[in-house]
Image (cartoon, rainbow, N blue to C red; front, side, top):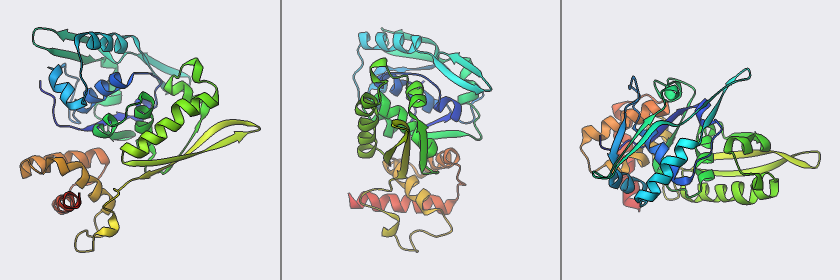
Amino acid sequence: MNLSNRNIVKQSYELNNARYSLTAVETDIIMRMIAEVKNEDEDFKPYRFKVSELEKKMGKQLNRNTIKSIADGIARKPIRIDKGKGSFLTIGWVSSFEYYAESGEMELCFDPKLKPYLLKLQSHFATADIRQIFQLSSEYAKRIYTIFKQWQQVGKYTVEVAEWQKILEVPKSMISYSNFKLKVLDPSKEQINKNTDLNVEYKEIKTGRKITHIEWTIKKCVGQQMTIGDFNKEEIETSINPHFVVRLAREIIHELKISQKEAKDKAKERCIFHGETFTEKMFKEAVAVAKEILKSK
């Protein structure tokens, strides 16, 4: 199969908050595979594609030694999913990772036990745009960004420092809060604010003299050049969620050169992922706003 133009990563809250540690490139590959999973899929498929195609999507070069290292890394790094009431599941990301040198292809198969966390998700799931994830160079920033996407509608997220260190599986050298802040929190915040659709800030919460919790404020960026206030009532009907229209518009900007039907199908898909109801009016408004954003650049 060829890699599709699907850009939405959709995973259950349990998987989004599971304990695991992947490198930046390993994260990108796993997220790319998750984006290939369709909402209507009954089962996982073997995802086989040309390495050159993946390189183009990721913007990274992958030689044979790099691919071997990635395969070994993904294979030996488990995920621990909290199932509640003391129960947990420890599982690998893939059941197999195969490289075909002659054709320059690779094939990955998700472990079947990941089905409840990636297939047929109707509620309690988080979504993120893989293009935003690819913009981040730090594995911690990538992971933290996907967690923030779960909380962006709430706008706040308070987490215990020790618990987050476990979820991110930071090395022992980062257990001290000063190192954790220096190497994980601050670089991730800077990268997310600079390169994604979120703007985040945090404050430290102390228990006694020790910093034990971090309270994050999460805001959705509409864009530096275009905001809701830039459009009048004729351009965006108040009966339609204007924030979602702009978000949808920004997501389909790069697809305006494809057919109207293809763009509409992708818009419907994104509405499902974001929990919105698709309407023809919303689609027309999104296309109009997208064109305005393009003009402003």
